[in-house]
Length: 248
Image 1 (tube, one colour):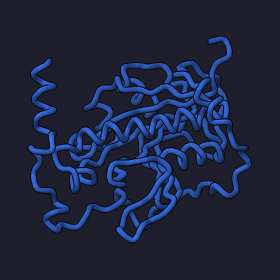
Image 2 (spheres, rainbow, N blue to C red):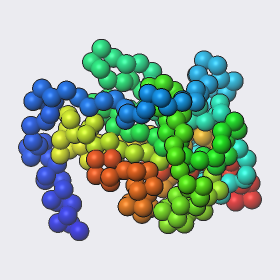
Image 3 (cartoon, helix red, strand yellow):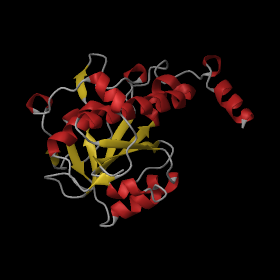
């Protein structure tokens, strides 16, 4: 195992890096995965319309826990919009052609797409969705009727996926990060995943919901369910969200 880490650290050290596509003058990848021009997007409530009050940051941090057991309580559409905005919300597109968001990312690369398994959200049908961050909107995806069961099975039957109001699946688009950071990208993707999931923890805690971060999942199965190739695009991290069960 030590040999593995030694080799990884050596090959991703600065002195080992290839010349990046950015240095070669190659245009940067799109800021977002494409979707059909005919797709019908579901608009989400904008931040300036929310009724959610500000939260005390210290209190939120101190009471944060990983919460795996949930009551069958739905999220409102406003609450879901709040969670999505605070984890991947686009605040501005800069003159450099990058997005500035509510969460940090190496070089403002923001290499993640957010997919959602929605079980209980008011005004939304259960199923599989994708957050279109640049539009602050949802795109419903085609999925089998038993997608919840398939997703839970691919997460090694972790019950919180079945019982969640919604489960977040963060998908890494490697080209977006590698355009600038080449071999070092894998370090930064995992760092960025931590930033995003921590924001989800704190945002959910501030509205009385809980999160359980999930890194134990069957890579090939979960990627196949989201139609990802597992290399250029792959699930890097998962977070279930639900109303904590009082008795637990």
